[in-house]
Image (cartoon, rainbow, N blue to C red; front, side):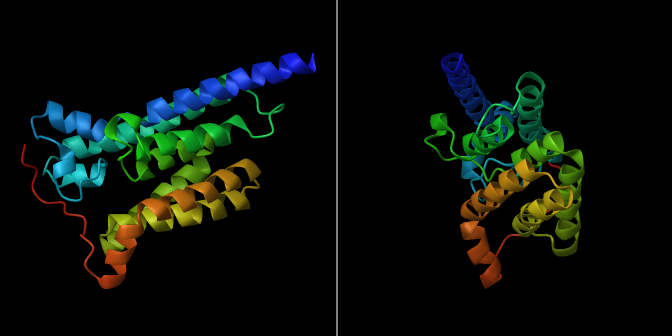
Length: 212
């Protein structure tokens, strides 16, 4: 019986890992800009695949669609994982495993030579699905900082840094662990942005006229 349990857990862990990574690695920003005839988003602005860089094309609609899609893929898989899998018999809860692989897939997609985005929208989507209070609090934190300072990277970092605090106040141990890992991933992906912020030459959010 114990052997069957271990085998089932192994299959489940493998399935959730592969599913989360592959869905996380879907580059919506690249797909949408190419469909719209705007070329390769990686050759525009920062070269990032996320909504902030898509906004630099001047197309606010595509930027919003990218934001919602990147967040949605994270949220959808977390909801799927929560619905079909129980964490009771696993030494690493599936929610933690799925969340990590979703963000790693977005940040390091295998079909783009492991050069992806920053993972913030996907992270926020995961948080909303895992615990909507923590997720909404993190989103509001991002919005407030972005409106005050107009730096997307700064807003993202502060939103992710504060998310473990929100999770801790709600006594959600698994989410504290997951958000702690998200902090590490966010800082790693934003290391160049941090340098530019310190030097004072980081690009600000531009909400100029829509080109389309």
